[in-house]
Length: 278
Image 1: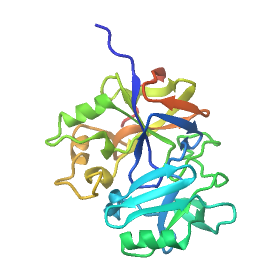
Image 2: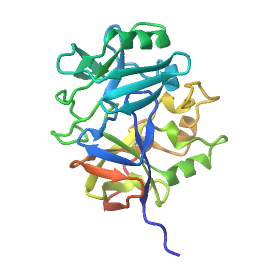
Image 3: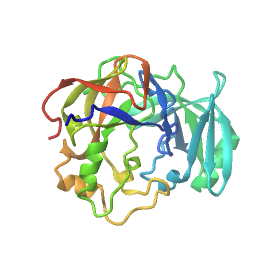
Image 4: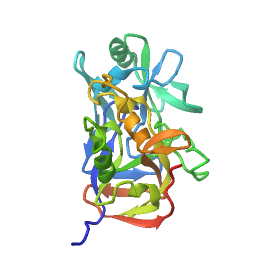
């Protein structure tokens, strides 16, 4: 019996860094990621970016895009709509890890809505097209850029690898624990460790490095509540899913050129090598 060919079974976009994502049937691919992915970010009163690492309750926000507008929904506070800041909006210098980024501030009513949920002063910013942030030069080309994601434009995971992990867990987890952009089925478990380049339609992705995982994977993806124990991180470590001292799941990737991808698209492995773990 012939094994099924690799295909995309899930596409996901996360408009606001560390808030919920939503599934897509089709996705325009831009140099810095799926169009609209992680171009918005919450910052505190001194401009530090906020994530579920220090604010797990961020998982409670539902997020949608409506044209140029962002729609935030919180179970206790209702729905708030904010338009993408225009060229005349105030700007602020903020940081994602070591990278300094010029971002545009949203209006005070958005800050008030979010501050009530956070219980402290916070603001929402947007990364405009002209604000370029280089991807990690250790793994990327000089002209590769990224949005407000932690490090790379895309996160690629496989259904088979999640099944292999869940076979070792006392309580299985969903793929939403890992916040991927592209989920692929029809592979062997951990096949992605050997990929160097893959093609989806007209889009070619370079596999940059394994994705190092953090405490967010141990939180319930809809509530942010800490699950009992330290899984799936503990089990991934026990399974030897380590690279450069970090626990990993999935692969970071970079697109060579713009295009469009869709659920159901075939995935062709153009280049393979040895496992990039270790």
